[in-house]
Length: 480
Image (tube, rainbow, N blue to C red; front, side, top):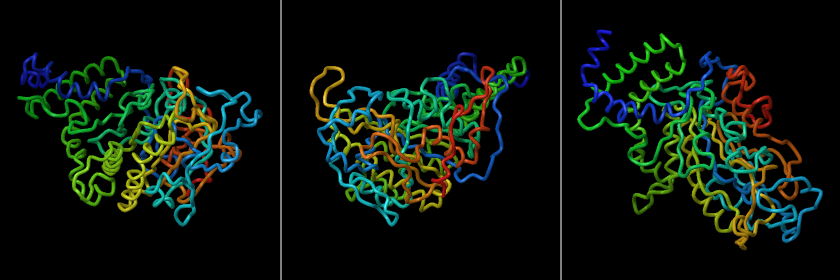
């Protein structure tokens, strides 16, 4: 206690509270310990890798709203012949839709599809930049989910469950593999808009709260309270952290609550992040040709570019520094109306940056062990939505939510390059070959990270839980 009293005497009680709540304490509590403490009394276990990993890191590019598969990566020329008609009744019987009826008329795609790269991966003309890296992509056309609405669909895509309370893919990755850099979180979130489900889709659920995603904001202050309050030195801040650590240590000795250990480690991490994060988020330190590659520079000089482009470059910098899982959200893919104008805008926002991210990782020798994932929470219907769901007024044509099939792509991290997997029917309505359920997708990603999805479990409320629940099979056909 003598040492503790000496440290606390460096600041008076009021200053300790001020620095603890407005400084490092606020960073640790608001950013890293914001979830209720729900950990199992057994605490976290860190299993060894179950087999040799193909990927060390993951960058998940989530297109919030659900891209239309038949306008992007799954061409359906039959829609031209069925344009304006209803689909066969036996196809839509018993199906659920968010805002349309099964009798809604078909709407064709106006976009040209061509084989790209030496491998001949077929994609829409909307992606001229991504087409230049087609030989690095595995396109999965036969994804399937259980959920038809955005919040539950986002949760299902990231947690394997359509309701709140489960750990996310990123949290499971942090729990299973930890971080490669003790000065940074294992799991970071970058976004240019808030997903419908909000923070639970980067939460830790019932895992210890140090495994939840840490949100980095745009601008010069990626995390609030990262710098020392005015008039506070680093030595004083260190003293506060040490004092809180010792108090928490005494509490742990008494209560043996594993979340107290999490508090201790997160205060320490928050303190170390003060020196590592500001330099990490300074994109101006990047070479001019890299900034041009992502669209952040033009011939006329500086260009703010899209926040998604900045986030993609930031994601590369994060995994380069050892962050295990980076989740990037891009808003604007919920095209219920005016899809022929809105979809091209959404694609232009991400096309150049996605290609640049893959090229950048490859030229640095990082693509082989970084798994890049692109996709939304579900797909869109081949039928048109013509009326506003709230007012019933006629709108420019769009597409409704569709859970029965959708497309994603993956690159690097042990998947085949220049490969297309899965087949949907002539309308892009249902899967006819090689279905990949979201649980299968999670099982495959875990396998690439060196983890057997059936063995990475956590005991909660008397039951062993895992990311894939009681489902999921590794899709070996897409592995390199």
